[in-house]
Image (cartoon, rainbow, N blue to C red; front, side, top):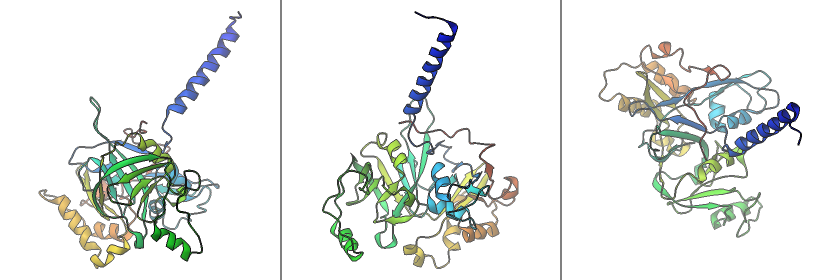
Length: 344
């Protein structure tokens, strides 16, 4: 047997390549999934805004998907940037900083106007609690995603789709005919993974049209990027609690500074808010309750006017202290050290 140094080096190189390949195969599919250490109960801001430079071959959607961000989030954070052709070298804001929704930090919390899902995995012994967050699609105005509290009641891999009569009728009006059942496969709009909610007829599922994630395009169900739900499917147990909330404005604390995160109010709820600043002020007042703290109302108005989904410091002097309202971070120079990839 040849045990020459050169042969040993070659063998070691092949072994290293196999180890690297095995590690890559063991990693979750969703490299862009966002996972953070859960902050203390009195802190609600996680993540960091990033700024990246586009190349000449990618769209805003491509950049967003790579970082775990949906269409509307990217569009609102980048006014004036062409969605389809941002252009070589264009600076693109990736809004990966979030105020956690005002809801118990357990199970799944879906904030409909934000089009974002938050998952609080069960605590593991000896490890810090975590929070994961993912972009989603929600129902169109005439097929609104329902609000309320429910649970995951079943999970199906490679599901068949049985379109209800209402959807079949809509297809006929568009000149299309849907079959009674669409089997698993590339033409199935449910994708490869589906989690059924206790709300009859509603699912959290994958999709064969991932470019629609982050838009109002569904018949009420919640769509996720295929790689995101694949990473979650095995880890979310049946009976996991799900809260679907309507919070266009979220307020939360970080390092003694109060932030507000503003999203457009859904069309079907706009009649309830003839003065958009009012619910934003109410949200801030709730966050201030019991604290002696001064906020800048001009910054609140600006955040509501911009509706860009980026947490804005509204404490008096807070924006200056934090280095600007957007606190943009160049992804090539600084990353949140607590962010990890989900296991599984």
